[in-house]
Image 1 (cartoon, rainbow, N blue to C red):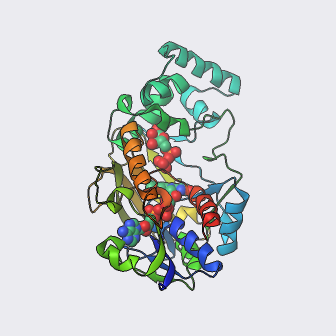
Image 2 (image 1 turned 120 degrees about the horizontal axis):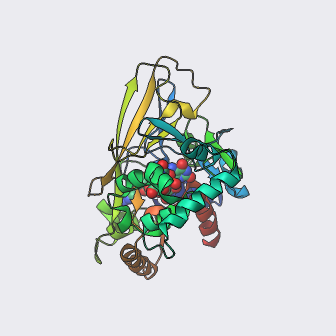
Image 3 (image 1 turned 30 degrees about the horizontal axis):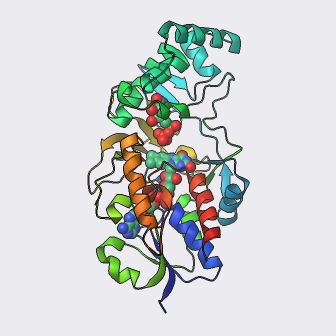
Length: 368
Ligand code: FAD
Ligand code: UDP
C-alpha cells in the first residue's frame, strides 16, 4: 500500500480545490507546490495593509450557484464590481464598451444614436467574413472603437499584429447599450477578504503541502508515494516536450509603492495605445474599500512578455497549431495509468477561477 491515495501537483485554485474535496472524503492527499507559496496565479500577499495580487488583478465572478457558495463557505467575500477604465491619448474611457463609452467617443446619448453610429462605421468597413481579430473587431464595433480601445492593447498583449490573430479573442468583449460599467455579465461578483491566498490556505488546512517542491525533479520518487496523480502543471513539460513545445504568453510585473493615498481613478486602468508598453496599471488597494492605509499605495505596471523557460506561462495561444499539439499531449496522458490532468496549464485553456472550481467539482465526482 502507498502512503497517499492522491498526489496533487500544484496548489493553484484547481489543485487546492481537488485536494480539499478528496480530503473531505477521507482520502489521504499530498500536495506538491514548486513555488514558495500556495495559490498559483491567484496568490495574494498583504503588505502595509494592502492586499497585493501577485500575478495580476483577480476578480471573482460567476453565475454558478455552487461555485459562489463554495467560495463563500471557505472565506469571507465582500461585494466588488469590476469597472476598469481605458486610457488613450490623455483621456479616460469607460469599459466595457457601453453607453458611457459611446457618449465619450461620439457624444451620443441614447442606444438608438449609438447603434446607428456604430452601424454606420461597421458598414463603412464592408467586412462580411472576418478572417482575423482586426476584421472581427471592425465588423463588430467599427473603426473608432477599434482604434481607441482595441488595436494598441491587443497588439501589445499578444505581441502580434491584430490582422494575424484569431478572430475568436475579441468575442470576449461585450458591447452594451446601457450606462453600465460592470465589466462582467455574471450574477455574482466579489473579492475575498484578506486576499485569495486566505481562501486557498483555508482549503488546504489539515492537508500535507510540500512547498518549494518540483514534482518533475523526482517524478519516480513521488509516484511511489501515491496511487493516483492529479497534475495541474504544464502538460508539455510533463512529457519532456516529446511532441514539441506549446506556446504561451507571459507577463512582466513592475511594482512600486507610491507615497500618496490614491494614484489613479480606478483599481485597473488599461493603456490602449501602442505606447506605453504596459497594458495596464493595477492599484491594489482600490479592490478593498476598507483598506486602512491612507499614506501609501502599491501599483503594478503589467507588461506583456514573450514566454521562455523560467518565466511564468500566463496565457495559452489558442491557435490551431497549439490546440492540436495540446490535444496530442492530452491523449498521451489518457494512456498513462492513474494520471489525471486538471487546470489551465495541463489542459491548455484559459480558465477563470469559477471555471477552475466547476471543473474541479466535476472531476472530483468521477474519482474514487
Ligand atoms: P495555476 O494557478 O497556474 O496553478 C498551477 C500550480 O501548479 C502553480 O502554483 C504552479 O507553481 C504549480 N506547478 C506547476 N508545475 C509544477 C510542478 N512540476 N511541481 C509542483 N508544482 C507545480 N480569473 C478570474 O476568475 N477572474 C479574474 O479577474 C482573473 N484575472 C486573471 C488575470 C491574469 C493576468 C491571469 C493570467 C489570469 C486571470 N484569471 C482570472 C484566471 C486565474 O488566474 C485562473 O483561473 C487560475 O489561476 C487557474 O488555476 P490553476 O490551479 O488551474 O492554475
Ligand atoms: N482588449 C482590448 N482592450 C482592452 C481590454 C481587452 O482590446 O482594454 C482585448 C484584448 O485583445 C484582450 C482581450 O480583449 O486580449 C480579452 O481581454 P480581457 O480583459 O477580457 O481578458 P484578460 O486579458 O483578463 O484575459
